[in-house]
Each structure stands twice: as structure tokens, then as C-alpha cells.
Image (tube, rainbow, N blue to C red; front, side):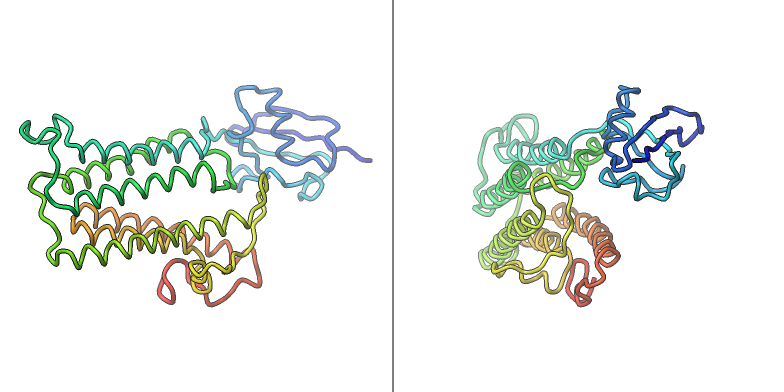
Length: 308
């Protein structure tokens, strides 16, 4: 059996960082990263980007050496991705913040509103309903992170957590300040508007959870396998017939329901910003599906059926 020689160069300076002798032909990029880590302990595998070209795309951990367009002396280029943090930790941090922050405003702890309102409660039942819905949403996200989601990438750059937390925590504080404010006024159409909004919110929360379960069942534990998601016996998954990312569709519907329920401008703005970001993600995933699967259903749109 022939063996490979692998040299790893710095993608910026072209300096030789490592030379690996007698590497098995069936060695994966993940295994080469582990070998590189042994010679450079400061760069653990998760923060390594190994590529064939200094400006090219990162190779996947599961790529096999003998299947790559390289000779028996293979040259790879290394980039440091920076300190990494697990996706689970990121999600738990992102979602715990809004849950706690909102409750601080709901209970009107001191130094938020005027002293005479400390630890008082709102006279409007929609304020209490909004708190329950907001808390339910983030509790659901936390539980899904722990027990449902299977991540294709184990880590993300540590610096991103500060940006993500600023987004989620900041919007939670902004929304909570106005919804729980002593001068808050209920929606203009009263009880009918609130009940309709609650139905929309709960419907979309159940739909979102159903999609997450369906996506989880597509990927065996410990695997990075990608398959085309199709509707299951659960009616909430039938939207897969029309969109590629129905989890985002349902998420948008949940926040539209919360906006209608509270009739609060910061909530509407959060919904708009979230919709723009989810549309970017959905379009990217839709393009990825089309590129990877030749038999991908042509009728599907990224996030909104027949429109977007």
C-alpha cells in the first residue's frame, strides 16, 4: 500500500508548519487535523481550516486523502479560525438571556421603572399572557438545544457569541420594557385580536417543533449525513411540499402572532429583522439543497410558498 507525504503550509505566509510522513491513503482530513494538533497543541482541530488552496474553501473533516486531487506528496494550507465554542453552549447562552431579562421587566424589579411601580403587576391580562408566551418560546428553544438538535458543525468562533447575545438580549430588553411598562395599552381590537394572535402563536410553535423533530430524524446520532427532508405523517410537516426551511416559516409566524398579541413596535421590528436574517439563511440552505440533490423538489421556495 502506498503512503502519502503531507505538508501543511500557513495560508498567509506560505511557511511550512508541519510535515507528516507515511500517512495512510484512507486517512480523513479530520485525522490529519489531529496529527497536526499533536505538533501544534495551540491549534486544536475545531479551530483549524485545512484547504487545498490558500484562498479556497475549507475541506470537510470526512474528506478522504486518496479521493482528493493531490499527488502522493500532498500540500495543504492552514488557517486559524480563532478560539471556538460549542454550538450547544452558544444556544444555551443566547436563549437563557432573553428568558431571564424579560422576567426582570415583568416582575418590575427596582431601577427599571419609577420606584412606586417596583414589584407591582400589570392590570392587563395580555401582559401576563405575553410573558407566558415569551417564556414558553425560549424554554422550548433551550429544551430543543439539549434534547432535539443535532449539529452538523460542533463549534463556532467564540467572538460570534458576543454579537449573537447582543442581538437576542438587547431585543428582549427593548420588547420587555414596553410590554411591561405601567403605561402600556392593550391591542386596539381587544380580546378578539389577542385570541387570534394566541392561536397563531401556538400553531406556529407546534409547527416549528414538529419540523425540528423531522429534521432530527433525518440525521443519525453522530452523523453529518444530509438528506432531502420530506413530509411525514405529522400534518405540520406537510409544508415541506412547498418550502425548504419550514422551521423558519413557523418561527416567522410565531413572532407575527406575538406582534399581533402585544401590538408593540419593538416586537414588530424584532420580527422584521428576524425575517430578513432567516430569509438569508433559508436562501442559502435552499441553494445548497439544489446543488447537492439533483432530484430536489422543484416546487419548493426557501421560506414563503411561491413568493420567497
